[in-house]
Image (cartoon, rainbow, N blue to C red):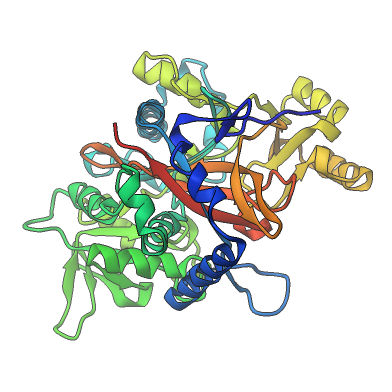
Length: 470
C-alpha cells in the first residue's frame, strides 16, 4: 500500500508549520464550517471567479471549489523553494536566448536538435532577435509536487501565459475576510504585492525606443476566454488598460491604443493570447484576435511583448526533461529542484519500458494542458489503458511518461468532515531586470478521494498557501 507524506502530521504529531491550526480545526463546529464554506462560495460568485469547461454541454462557466484549510510552509522551506525556482527561471530564459541565437546547447549535444528546431512552439519569426533586456519568459509558473519533508519535484514549467494567479490572490483575500483571528495569531507573509511587482517587472523590460514612463497594456482574447476573469482582474490591480486586438493598431514604428482622447503609444504588451493569434501578417492569417503588423514593430524595438513569442519551446514536456542539463550548462550549478523521472516515448528504449509498464505510469501529451489528454495508469481501467496504448503507438513523439508519484496530502474540508487530499503547487516567478517571487503560490487540491489530478477542469479545487515569517 502506498504511503503519502501528510504535511500536517508526522507519526501522529502535528508538524511545526501547522501547530496553531490544530485547535482551530478541532474546535470549529460543523455548522460553522458549512456556513463559512457557503460564505466563501458566495464571495467567489459575487466577485465572478469562474473558470470554463468546454465540451460538456450546459453553461461552461463553473465556480472553482475553494477549500478553507490553508496549506502552510515554514520560512526555511520556502527559502529553498525560492532559490530553486529562481535558478530554474534563469536557466530557462538563458536556454531561450541561446536557441533563438547561436544554439550552443544543441551544438554541444546536450539536447537533441529536433526537439528544439522541429518543435511546433519554436517560432522561426524571432530567430536572431533579442527581446528587450534579453528576457523571453517574464512570468514563469513552475508546477511542483512534494513527496516528503524535504522532497520536492518539478512536474512541468509554464513559460508562456501561466494562469491561476488570481486564485492565489483571491484565496488570501477571502481567508483574511472570513478568519481574521488566524492572521493575527500566525505571522503569515503577504502576497498582495504581486500585482505591483508584476507591473514593475513588465515596465522594466520596456523597449529601447520607449521614452518616459512605459505604458503597459494587457492583451486578452476577450470575454469568451476561460481566463478572462483573471485578465480583467490583473489589469485592474496593476492599473493598466485591458485591451483586445481591435483596440490596438500599428502606425509607423509603434503600436497605438485607441482611446476617447485619441491614440496613445503602447510600450509593453502583456499578452494572454497564443503566439498563433498575435499577428495575422506573421502567424495565422485568419486571426481576429491579434494586431496586424505587431511583429514588425516588436522586431524593430518599438514594443515589448511579454512573454516573448516563441517562449513556448521552453515549456514543452519533452524539452522539460533537459532543464536540469540547462542549469548545469548555462549556470554551472547543480539543480536545487529535481525533475520527476521521465521517459520520452519518442526513444525506442523508453517506449518499450512505457508500453510494458503502462498500468503503473502517468502518460501526458507533450503539448497537453489542463489535465486533458493524459492517462493515470493506476486509476484507469484495462480498456482505458489499452486505448491509450494505441494512441502512443500511433504517435510516440507526442507522449512522455512519468512514475505515479506519492503526492503529499494536506487536511481538507470535505462533506464528512476533514480528510487528507493530494495537492500540488504553482508559484509565479517574475523575470525582468531582476527575478522576483512573492512568498506564496497557488495550491491546487484533488477533492476526489484518492485522486491525483488537481486540475480545476478535472474536479480539483484551490486553497490559500501560507509562508510563515521567520
